Amino acid sequence: MEEEKADLTSGPKGSTLFGYFPNGSKCCNLSSMGTEWKRVFGNAASLFSLQLVTYAISLLAVPYLVRVLGPSGYGAVVFAQSAAMYFLFLVDYGFDISGTMALAEDQDNSEHVSRTFHSVMAAKLILLLAGFGVFALLVYFVPKFREEWVLFMLTFGMLGGQFMIPQWFYRGMERMKFIAYSLIAVKSGYLALVLLIVKETGDYILVPLANLIAYNVVGFLALRSVYKKFDVYFVFPSFSEVVQRLREGFTYFAKSITDNFAKVTNTLLLGFLAGDAAVGYYGAAEKLMDAVRGMLAPAFQAIFPQSKKHASRSSTDWFGFFRIMLPAASLAGLLLSLGLLIFAEQAVSLVLGADFGESVVILRILSFYLFFFSVNNLLGIQTLVCLGMGGAFLRLTLIARGAGLVLSIIMVPLLGKTGAAIALLGGEGAYTAALTLYIIKTGLITKARRGEI
Image 1 (tube, rainbow, N blue to C red):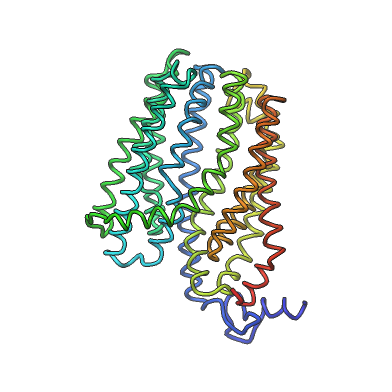
Image 2 (image 1 turned 180 degrees about the vertical axis):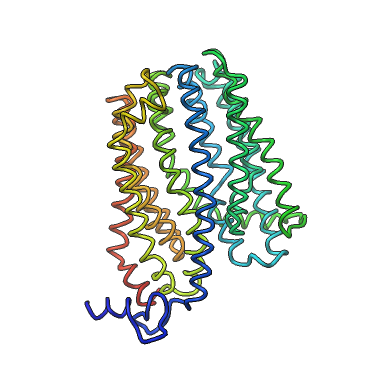
């Protein structure tokens, strides 16, 4: 075992950055690795800057809204957003992964890029229209939705802008600064509109209107940038191309919807069982946790195209990349979890105010979600997906998220908003356990290290 370890970390003079692997292959040469790491860190820096800016904007928007609207008004907004969230997953349909991978395979081929872009956007448009039809029926037939039908329809309207902002395209082309430009513009526009038009409790219905305007204006400009800033020309996609994109994205769509199903269902269950105020306390704590989690997202988004490239070369090449990323990401997640646990009371007091003291316990429970989230991304997306094991990835996701959903159904009626937090954390912990056990049982990392995949 010690000899095997030495083979991974040392080698003769002139060896590669990660040394020689047991099968005698090399990870990649030093100069190419330097260029790739420079791109990873550059993309991560752009996205991290984005997160800092959007986090700063959130520190202004959320405190303002919770103070003006109160727990009930803010809870109504969060409840409507949770209902629309299912349809956001439908429109995204896993293209953030499948579309990114398709582009990353041949970024310099303008024909490939143009055909991929238009076939993915056509598929997203079909899903958007289908989702709107279903959502409209729900608003009409569900009494709680029908009572606030304007709120719900305005909330759904922001999905048009989400559809137009091609984050998947920017990731696939590894031009993360365009994501930063788009989302900073959205958040800034949203904040300006909120401060301008939301003045009292009854104005809660104007919050989704601000979101709708900001997302759709920026979405139009982002779509325009694809044609102006990239070598993309219009191609009318064929039916078979659209179907192909839907097939490619299905595994990741299923993963996305199951990944977030329990999280969104927690909020909806709270709304139906405990009322808007409970949703307000829980949703505010979750917003704080998500803001901190956003500090991790840039790294994972920047790493993914590189993980896929390394895996495309060889599993040993991928392993050299992975063996650095796993401990780094896990440590980052753990430190953020501990920080949020320790300073939960101060964070709630500073951002949410005295009326949201009930959110402190919820935030402390949710704090360790950050650690599990970090580990799960490395073991799931960066490992199973990049090594071509999408089927196993989907099965494990379904099992773990099913466990999370069962927890939600049990805990929310029993403990309300606290039970929702426990269920969310338990589901993410179950996902970590499922991924870890599968990788250990199959010996996947060892096989990758030896070049047997």
